[in-house]
Image (cartoon, rainbow, N blue to C red; front, top):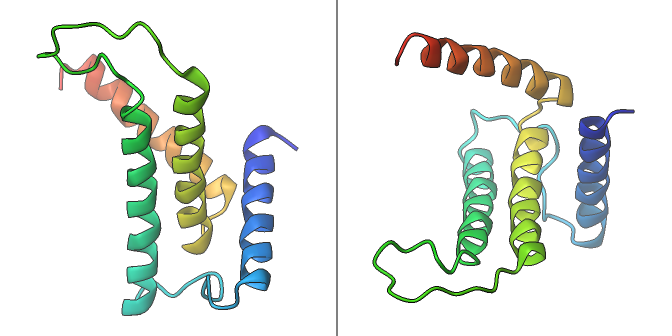
Length: 123
């Protein structure tokens, strides 16, 4: 089992445990994305992921160009934890939408090729 497979397994197990512990916390999977309530659920997952990224960015105390003082401390573990929180929502969104780790990997490879071509072509 590779690392991406393991992440998907862990996330699926968490979704199942949460669904059992708190009935109704997740719809039946995979969701039908033509249904409004399922789209709203997916949107909520995505926005929660964005919120976690914002929390990660808040750990970057020196990121403001107008700031006159420098903060020497950086909480690396807190920054990474917020990124992991964000990824958990992203992986949940992928799973809920009915995609697999293979689907995600193939889409990633395809997009990576596009990005490299853009870079090569001066996009």
